[in-house]
Amino acid sequence: MRTRIKEFRARHDLTQAQLAELLGVRRETISFIEQGKYNPSLRLAHRIAKALNSSLDELYIFDEEDGAQISD
Image 1 (cartoon, rainbow, N blue to C red):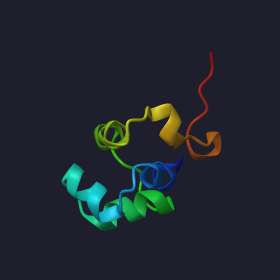
Image 2 (image 1 turned 45 degrees about the vertical axis):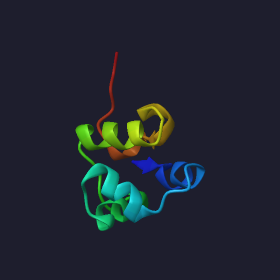
Image 3 (image 1 turned 135 degrees about the vertical axis):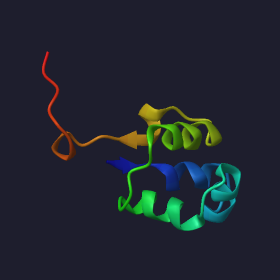
């Protein structure tokens, strides 16, 4: 999963540390999420999107190769 967190943080003029403080997580957590080294829980992903006035669809890019294929 890739994210646009860094881009949205810049729009809101927030540092990783400031976003982390808003969310009650460590700065390293935000860094790892932005680097694709850590996938946040759905709850944290939603909190990040809300803090950045965004939706999950806008903020997260789900690569089909990263997960199971969903069939109809």
